[in-house]
Length: 109
Image (cartoon, rainbow, N blue to C red; front, side, top):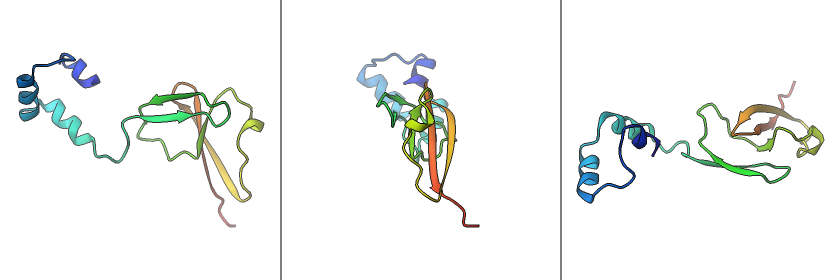
């Protein structure tokens, strides 16, 4: 939808114009379709593990698979506990207010 708006495509098209656009897509639409590999969803639902606040956002390519997310204003003691032997990594700037957390088994030393 964003790309269509950027390229002046109205929100409603007559059936014939839509068919023409699908049959002979402009280069930007061809590229956009090529980028949609299905590996990442276009939208994801984020929900704070502490308070339940939620929002739908477009995921970034650099986002790992989060164990959970939480609102950045919560205190560390409010977060789900880390299991014995796991290591926690946090990623700030997820959505409008979240911190993403990835908990993984620690390296045996």
